[in-house]
Length: 373
Image (tube, rainbow, N blue to C red; front, side, top):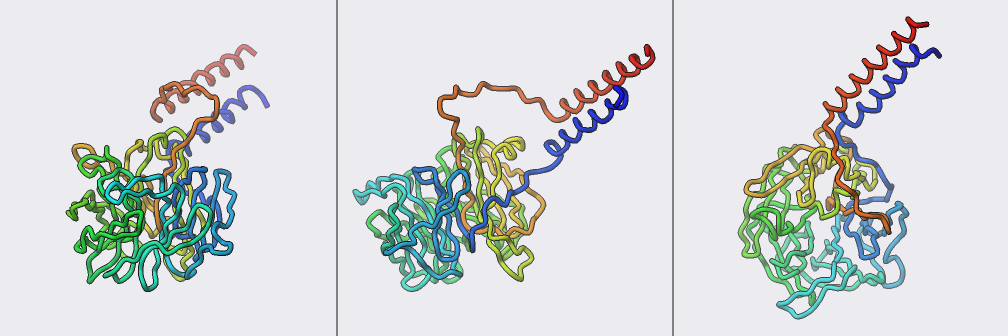
């Protein structure tokens, strides 16, 4: 191939490599197949994720290796068709009860009478933990990690067309926060202290209206944002999650895609994943809230300071059927490496102009070379 014929081919490769990074939006990766998957939480202190599917629990490590958890004698099993959402405890002290939640214990919603929560120890032993009276079912669970709810476990459940929020201490004692919250369900999360006026509140989505609410320890309910996502049962906003410190360095985002036959969004029984760089290039930063829809796994980012601002992250629905928590996990630098230095990344238009100038220069040199020949 002559020099002048090679120039267009080289330029085509350069522009082909540029286009996907600057034009396409983030795309969920169907990372690991897990039968009946409907929730993902963690990470545990050993770095593994805890995944719920088909009435069983699994551990997934950073390489994607999946192994059953709590499947032995005295372990955990339940109705394979139930969406028994789960939470993993960090080490938390409940001052009002004078006791502690042990790190890596898992807490799973019990969706049959008597409604409540089952504890699964880090060693894989299942134990009755708490009974939640007065609810028609249970549909959300999250730990208070900021302390406004005294580091208790928070659960939600429908009551006569509204939603009850109940706090549970480390002895299994319950306290009703409110029985008058709007209709809520799915992946709940407690906002970090820096999340504007909603810091420390329990944040929960309503798929029917598309709204995202905050519930305070005194039971007061405030609207955080209109998601702008599609609305309706099995369609609207299902899950919220907060971007932890260190996520934007090399983190991962996870979401459960449950196979749901005869549904416009049939799902794949996969654990979905997104790399942090796909989100940071759209402006997502540590401390932001992410919210994803059940039907199609579309997603927004919400940043709250003096006011809350909503940014669309994934606007085109897929066939995914999202369920449970939206889990952002911080990245970790390689052992023994120095902290990364700040690097200026030019905007896409600057890169395009630079390549265009380079193309013109190479073409001019090629023409001059040919004339000399």
